[in-house]
Each structure stands twice: as structure tokens, then as C-alpha cells.
Image 1 (spheres, rainbow, N blue to C red):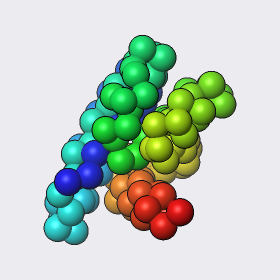
Image 2: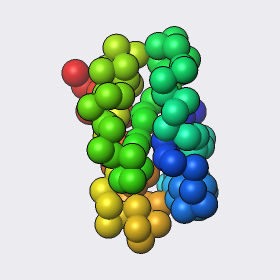
Image 3: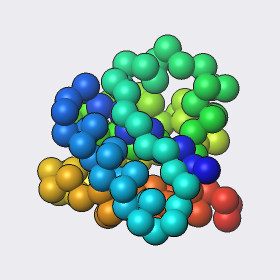
Image 4: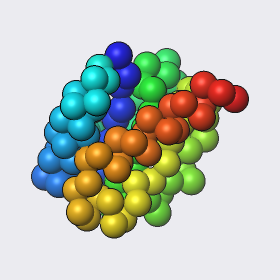
Length: 110
């Protein structure tokens, strides 16, 4: 099972995107959990808690803070990126999930 977490400002769109990503993964036969949390939870999470994730994606509206969070994910060994604004706006669950899967695969091959 893989676990992808979306970090956002707490909007409805992110929950919808998480659901579409989960649906895409299921259609591909991939056992995945995708959930969403507010970006502020990164600050309070321990490195051990973050290390339980396979991939972390920041929503575009909080992407300007990415440099504050990337070091913590790097320390946890979790690939992290900002979701493409177009993919987020189009709520393209398939594309965002594929991005997460590619990130997970690249991290394994390091």
C-alpha cells in the first residue's frame, strides 16, 4: 500500500482531488491511500510521522511556502513537490497520481 498526502490551505478542491487520485489508483490495480491535510500540520508533525508517507504533494496555493517544508520531508526521506497548477485546477486525479507514483519510483531508485 502506498500513502500519498496532499497539503493545502483546507479547501474543498483538495478533497475532491484526493478522491479522484484514489479512484485512478484503484482502476490501475494500485492499493493506495490519498488524503489531505492543512499545510500547518507539517510544522507540528515529527520526522517519524512524515516518514510514514510515500509521497507528499503541496497544493499550488501553498507552493510559495515549499522551501520552508522541503527540508523536513527530505530529512524524513519522503519525496515532495508542488502540484502543477493546471493539474490541480482541472482536478486531474490521474495526472497528479501518476506524478506521485513517478516520484515514489524515482525515490526508490536513488
